[in-house]
Image (cartoon, rainbow, N blue to C red):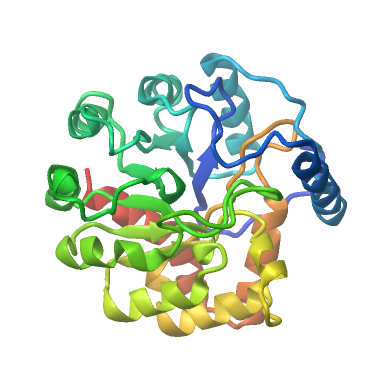
Length: 310
């Protein structure tokens, strides 16, 4: 936290962070094959060289320690709150962390909706643990989102206007998954249309499926994007496109009311990815986005969605 910090003069919520605690489930998005590991390492080196980030120290923290570390990050950068979308795939761990700094942390349930008790776990996470939405990873889905068995899950989210973040597109960083059954955001269309009171937030602008996200947003008012991460997927598009282009198109089509700031921050010693904020804030300034609309992006929309669900 030695860098000089300049922040907007309005509240900022990081709507998309991960807490580096012990994982309760294996990482399905990465291969252990040496050739793929070597490929991954080379691309990671380019990533760290580009951004100048400290590399992960590999430490797995206790809930108490990670809460302390992230609270210090939040205070140092003057963030209003941070929203943790995962904490080792364990809702109790996440709720425990939030309870230590309840004014600083928000959290979403994060468990597999294909498990037999998924609805009960969602209900428990919201009503007993005090979590505020749900995070899903499309790579883990073996059944379609509109499977009849999932209806109670979606109905509960809809009735309570709870936001859900669903990762589509490439996942896992270099050497990760390039395809899986429900990689395409179009796979959520029927659910999104059937349950229009669920704000469905697609992170990383769809991670390579930006066109599909735009078409979903054209059809449905409950489709949102978050800006989290490095958005490296742009480097792997067949045509040239910059993050500024993505923001410009999103502002034109979705409008500032359906765009949410996030960083995808996780490991230490990097902590909060301030450089992502700087890049995105500059893009908004360069595009001439009003202060009012910038505030919607950085905190207003997040607060609105969270307050609707309280």
